[in-house]
Length: 207
Image (tube, rainbow, N blue to C red):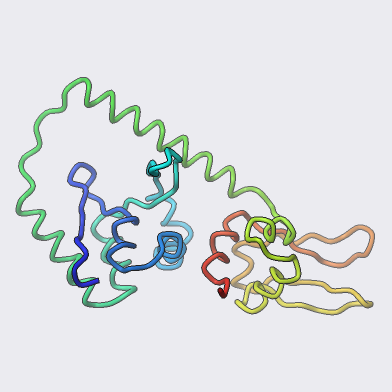
């Protein structure tokens, strides 16, 4: 953490979650999950974007302005927060006056914004999906019973035994992701979960 360089995109005046994760020395997907916790479910999506990986795949990331970058840094250590804050102040004194954009640059910016908005719409559409624990288990490579145990252990749901079966109820924490449903045959309550649940649970899986 001491030697990693802080990088600020002077075109958008943001810090990439990829760069911040490297500075903190954590996996990028773990950093992404923490952004949701620190900035909140309502605010974090405002800074969602994408980057092109070396294999050509389009992957999600965050582009964080000064305030949000400092908040994320503070969630790890005051030392890192000070480094991020100092880097922003240094940059402000060095950024030259911007030149008028050429027509080609304006068209490129418009093209990039269309791609970004298309990705955001795709992500919001995906977040509307309602997944069973079996479907979540398939994505996380876990058995459905292990998914239920993971949800219980981390305070997303509670379990009740009814007539030899099991019924699950979301906690206050779980209500952010759970969609209750009742079986017409057994009258037992089961739960479906938004696709965001997958990324939230991923860092919680013990090796």
